[in-house]
Length: 127
Image (cartoon, rainbow, N blue to C red; front, side, top):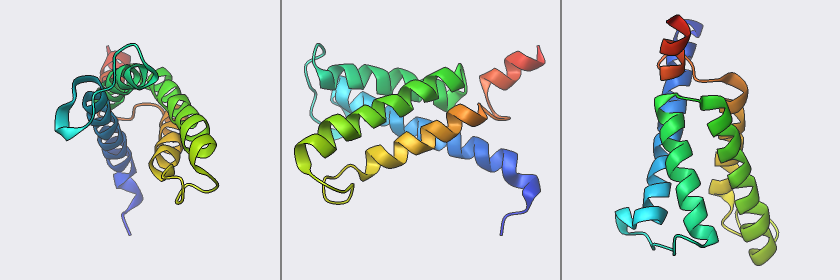
């Protein structure tokens, strides 16, 4: 068990890793990095790439974390209900919406908690 005194560091690592992964998903959609398909910029996939890249970066560095995480959570909710559930069926495992579901609730948690100690938001508060 991790002692409670490490909770602020663990939470900041949680935020950084989830933000970084979302940023990478965005770069994959937006620029075709990491072997992913690159949808047209003026499509739903292109818009998702923009949101994921910008929000992922902001969450990762901890700048405007609450609004960025709220937007990211909403995007993942839309992705699940509009794409996975509507087009593919019943449960997150069957319709491959498990990643969207997990990211949605991770970003909702980050939205309610804020940036944490290792963030630009924390540096701005100290100034």
